Image: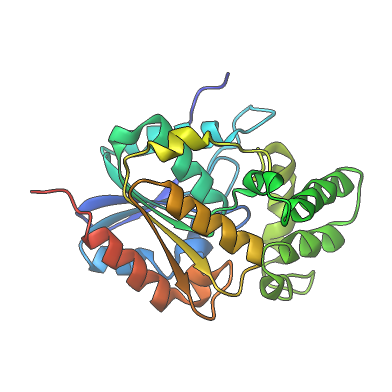
Length: 269
């Protein structure tokens, strides 16, 4: 059992805290460049954390980084900044961290906005999507056996969003970040390994907005819909023409959905 660590964070604005949690590779700066300023302008206190080992945050000494440990890091960081309860906003892997924090410390969470939650483990029980789930597991095994990064990363991304995969190769301006962060993929509990209890989610009384891009692969959209339906105070929305990275490439639409949802769940004065 490892102790949580305080995470590095970018903070802007004043008002109700909003914890922003990035996805699997890109740290807080690139992930939230088009949302932090907007949140601050709208009267929120945006706190975009770098998960452990990402960006400016320490890696810690854990050989295995569970989603729960990431969530505990987030909880500690927000508490040390006197920023709870907070709205939580996550993209991709960051959604899992937000869900886990809400399950374990619901009194510290005002709401969740979840962009493309990768709850792949739920697909294992769905006959239509079991081969999709199996391919994630197989791709990770191939990577662990030494398959080159430039081969397995695009294959992995194509399972989520084929359009996004086209933009990621060794000539991409983002490739240096992927090379630096790829080792963490083998240390972190993956979306196909994280299995939040469905009964606990069905009892979770936290307002939630689950968002998918309509260009993401069908299993991703199915998982988002399922989560939105399962959460007692959940709702689901789609961004037309957006994919897994719609928070960045369709930022106007994403920010409008997020801000509208946050405004409807502000704490009473």
